[in-house]
Image (cartoon, rainbow, N blue to C red; front, side, top):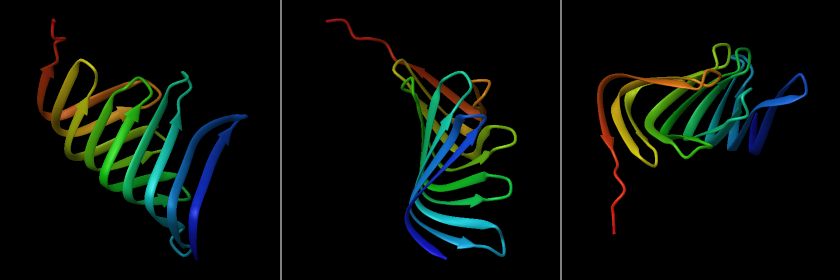
Length: 142
């Protein structure tokens, strides 16, 4: 089955937990999987924070609700941090986003680069797994 401009929303106990939008989707019922193009996933954490995850292509595994994104993957937090990488996977059971690819994280006062990453969306924590470099950004005085 092929669909254009789709939107899925997961609701638990009356609260939205995540929302997925895509330009197109091909569903493979025999594998219980969907292949998507131009994806945007919005995660709503229990603490009230919102995270946005975008990518060119992806897969959604309907049984596990896990999501894999590939191509220009960007994760943006509602407090202004942005993470860029080539691919990322979301594990619904663990509420984590991870990658083994090089990553770049940038905020108002810091820039981090490294290889591999693990984000716990509920705990509001992230780890860069190796080759970490940090650059602090100073405010220029006039």
